[in-house]
Image (tube, rainbow, N blue to C red; front, side, top):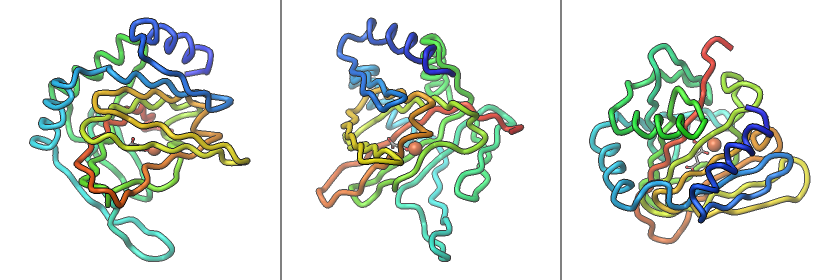
Length: 212
Ligand SMILES: O=C(O)CCC(=O)C(=O)O
Ligand SMILES: [Fe+2]
């Protein structure tokens, strides 16, 4: 989706949710809707994910050695969707009714997705290092929608070339939309923390073109 269309849809959403904030991440931007899900809905959805999904903690190769990722994840998607991520090929679990409802709501807002990479940060010791969601299968201009459940965590952004840096705190029930240009010009991370933190789940909706 191009930047112009993204901004149109984001503006419409911000109109519906007056607490929304837009963060410029030039030449793209991110829109945070803090209260997209009610606290009750967020809590129920988190319990649903913990109870019903198949969670995995794969090892990935880093500096020539295998390390387990510092979090758990699950991959949901339409049949036939494949996602190659850090050298791992992910086969999707089928949609559950509550996750499909979330996808339908995003679709009504103009954002189409066919999969979710779900992350579970069990405590402050879990996190995700600097990266961009720019795998080839995501296409040229990948919009990512992130719904946060549970413990608020900080998502940091740093510009790839230059000194720009931004931080967003993602509260439970929030929706964060990042435009395609963000993935080309910025990296993001969820830093580990020494503070005692409760669990958090992030639902990262993506559109995967399996044939790319
Ligand atoms: O947990 C988050 O908010 C970020 C997750 C993320 O960057 C990813 O799944 O690619
Ligand atoms: Fe990411």
